[in-house]
Image (cartoon, rainbow, N blue to C red):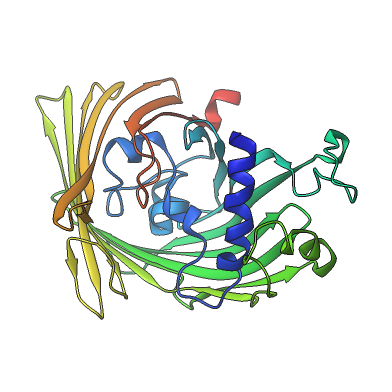
Length: 355
């Protein structure tokens, strides 16, 4: 029954995926790195490792050596898989390049639309399997600016989305970020996502589409449009880092996440919507880390018509030893959804481990 339920959702979604609309590529809002999830994604100003390619590419300039990162998480009670891999390499003392891949997918979905043959008999041999998967390939470049403490970074993104043999899409977009660090450990970050507006263009297999047009009465009767866009989003961050008695390091950050449309965010108008996130990290002898945060404040409508304020907490721990970083977070990995909370693990390795 679960496979049939998923298939019905996907049949409905073919229409919604391919319409000309202001929302797309929502899987890119999930985020990466358990350390960032533990801080409720409040990392735009402080991010300074290979994962900065996602959060703010300007932070890549803090890298002193090559790094790689890996993450795997389950989504929607293990129905979907979310995978991430990234690598970054300093080009010289002032610039860094990085590459990352994100995949969000549901695999081995049963296609039961042809389960009943022309004579009305059930034939299980007519069941086939397919996958619905979203991919993002990101190429990043970051460089320190002539102004002391300033750096910038740029992402070029290629989006690939596939729904079995029914439809597939290509998309392209750009991000840009800036970071500034003062001499007394104040950090400021600015991240603009999809700055040119990211466009996805869908290709729909009309022969395959005809097979599902009659699967649900009154649904999927017309071939959908084939263009969708992702509007620009801004993230602003301010952070302060402390050292306490040489053994303890304390990091705290506040972010504002801004979208140029009306949503259920804490602050919303017809022109712009804003929700804050706040996180902190305590590190002991640069080896053990404790993290917590709260964010994604949303005005959630209840069944009785009233509205309550919802939010997303995050908790996490980390351990680093000889260039190997292992992080864990307990959080809702889909900060734009009402998915169940997940246990997320990520791994980061400094290249010196292999030397």
